[in-house]
Image 1: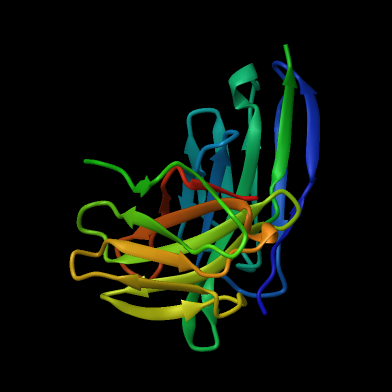
Image 2 (image 1 turned 180 degrees about the vertical axis):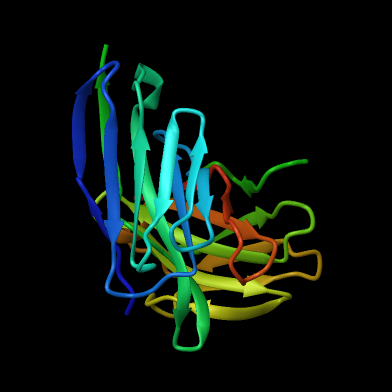
Length: 113
Length: 113
């Protein structure tokens, strides 16, 4: 079935540094979504990507839909302490004739002040 | 516009009992998906409902079931609870099942003792 490989699993950075994380798959996706989850809360949608090659920004966050439709990356610039959390990628694609949303296992981000 | 509402937020049950969790999607959204989140397994897809019909199902035992009502509200039920069912159960709503963003509720933290 469809699987997403998200890397890195965890990151420890200093405040002010830039961060980059990515997701890859052997399957093609029609939509890529990036979420952030704080402890004990549900994931919050950060960015949605709909077309291959699309580059979208949301404040200090930038994400791109890979041209092959099999990968996506998320960059965070000038990190701040509140960026701490787990970031998930999700790809929506067709498997077995039905649309499914598949999640990566997450990147845990720690920002040291 | 109200977000996705899940009730209850926290629940403690005993092994062998059954439990029902509720999810009210964003107004106008007709697709509701359920996920189980545990530290080791990440977000695992349970099932998706659209217009009162189950559209997709993940690889969970028959003890896990769900339904959707005509107002798009959804419930999931777990019977004969096991210790391993302890997890954060998340509900996500989408406008429909085709290439749209999924918005999550805060989740229900279920603890089985």
